[in-house]
Amino acid sequence: MSLDVAAIRQDFPILQRTVRDGKDLVYLDTGATSQKPRQVLDAERRFVETSNAAVHRGAHQLAEEATLAYEEARRTVAGFIGAPAKELVFTRNATEALNLVSYTFLNATLKRQQDQPLPDGADRFVLREGDNVVITQMEHHANLVPWQELSAKTGVELRWLGLTDEGRLDLSNLADLVDARTRVVSFVHQSNILGTINPVNLIAQRAREVGALVVLDACQSVPHMPLSVSELDVDLLAFSGHKMLGPTGVGGLWGRSEILASMPPFITGGSMIELVTMEKSTFAPPPQRFEAGVPVMSQAVGLAAAVDYLCDLGMTKIHDHEQLLTGRALTGLEEIPGLRIIGPCDLVDRGSAVSFAVEGIHPHDLGQVLDDRGVAVRVGHHCAWPTCRRFDVPATTRATFALYNDESDVDALIDGVRSAQKFFGVS
Amino acid sequence: MDLESMYQEVILDHYRNPRGRGLREPFDAEVMHVNPTCGDEITLRVAVGTDGEPVLKDVSYWNQGCSISQASASILCEELEGATVSEALAMTDEFVNLMHGEQVDEESLGDLIAFEGVAKYPARVKCALLAWMALKDAISQSHPDLAEPIDGDLTEISVADPQRHELNTD
Image 1 (tube, each protein chain N blue to C red):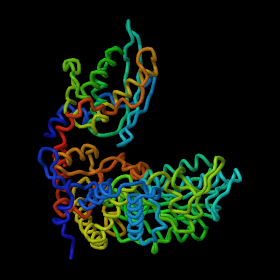
Image 2: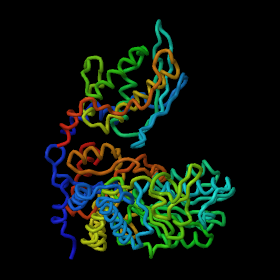
Image 3: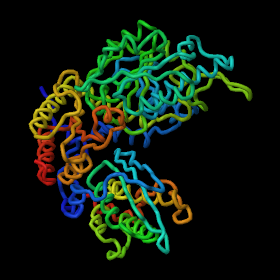
Image 4: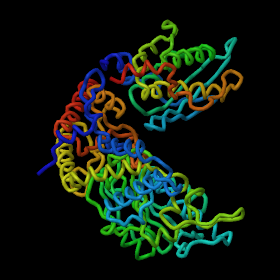
């Protein structure tokens, strides 16, 4: 049984509206943020209306209920990626999760220099002169800029795997780039701009040989495919709630227990402490150690509802459905003269983010024509500016297909591109 | 809206046949401005001379970006040929007013009035203003006494009248 898209669409109030003078909305920008089903909105609302209180503190019934709901949400979301609850840290978004990791290196390094106490095993985060960090040329700025900053503050060398013309990682020099001085290999699971799905365990295997930590940006994979951390040879994994039908303001960092336990805190303050005196503090165990302040409660509850929604449909079905649409899009787009797909042109190891350039039409102008027809796509560099440069384009037009899209949405995109060519006189 | 009201013929013409494009010497100041959300960029040079009062002897540029930002730079070049610096700054201010949906003197804007439809799209206002903010910046760098330095991001849309934008949301 395939997905019943018509029924699914009924769950998403925003998909019922029209845009630009009564045009049906064709939402193809899920890669930027997904729309939210009623079930998620209801769960958030229910929490705020019935159980809202600061979690992990207070002796009243509401505080108890709120804490239960929050921790239940943690169990649900962790379970979705095949992890125990204690290995999931709620962050504000994936960007914060990745910064949490890069700052762990900075903080461990600085504390060691000051002879300050660090958790057992923190040595893996203490940088020394001559160390390096390896990323790739297809990173979202969220997995690039934090490492640039770490490099600027510590002198650690920033290296990256390049890309092939097809839009895949060039792994020919993997063994040279990831060397004995590599401390962390941090890379994207599915590129938000190219759609490429990277061979996680192959890269991780090289990282293991040299004892480097493996960090995965799974923002674009967790929402779109069945995924379990038990099958991925990684140490830490970041994802975002709002790209998987959940609310904004919540993301996750999964980490293997012993890795999380060895990490000094990132953002500090209330909730994340054990003992506090005027001189110094000790810190709670994970995940609380990384959740300073009153956490993202209603958002976490909403995210758990999103996970339930995805699980009810089935991640395999969702993945198959999106592959079908992606295949239709690739075929239809490739038939358009002057159109170039930026990224893999087949369905092998690729997700539903499809970027392209149309000769003679800047993506902004193309996006405007599509918007005029109700088709919402992303135009620009997609927070992956170096990736655009690699393919010699200032920007691209990107469509992403999700569980609430159907064939007619793909066709609307293709018709829209053809109509833009006509409008600008380039067909 | 109909696309024709945004992409008026004069805009498409300047986009397809940009006037004065290419960097020239001599110049008194060179600036590079980017629109970080989309990657549009312009490098712009000004040469300022005096003819009783300061005049723009030459404005040259190289840019890449969408039709709106390209056409805007081309029209800038054409409209300001031989203009005095005060005329150039006055036109810049008037164009900003147009982009912010305020009342303008249409006569004074020349071909720039073609961008009126762009003002309805906050995301495109930056494209239209990119060259003009670069010009203002370049003048302020070569002649600080003539133009205020660019303070913050002047191309950010200021939604003075939110209703105006609501009209376009349905």
